[in-house]
Amino acid sequence: MKMFKQVILLGGILTVGVVSAQSSQMNNMIKVGANAGLAVPADNVSASAGVDVAYQNLITPGFGLGIATGYTHYFGKDNNGINNNDVGVIPVGALIRIYPKQTGFYFGTDLGYGFLVGDEKVASNSTVDRPDGGFYIKPEIGYHNKDWNFFVQYQKVFVGDKGDLPNQDYNVGNIGVGFSYNIPLGK
Image (tube, rainbow, N blue to C red; front, side):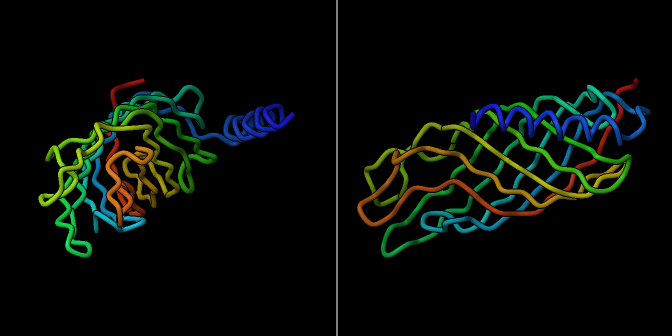
């Protein structure tokens, strides 16, 4: 029953996107942008900065699907004598966007796998290995027009308890802001 309600809710959201959708002037585009954020929780990293690249196809004028990747760098921080290393995330995911109007508010998410890159150890003074990656999610909400998107995001790679130290949970996640520029590829 719970799944049935979720399917009905998703169908309603898509219907609203189709009914009040934007014009279909630009159906295919490459989105190139940047983001910055603060780590949450901030046990092993303090902040992040990254670049995003995505391809989006407007299935309907108010609903876009595509693929997304990029690179986000998380800056390691010292935590009670643990010298945490920096870590990078290279996501490979599906892009989902809903645009209720031609310009204005939009929301969506990227879902996929986040590959973790950088030093093999969690900290320079530790023998614990850094995880290789995990489930990646990046929900965002923002403002869009034909050329630009400005957004607030939450970005997270779920690694379970891999990389945890006795007094520190391993985390790769942030709350941040970003922007992207839309490069049209034609109708």
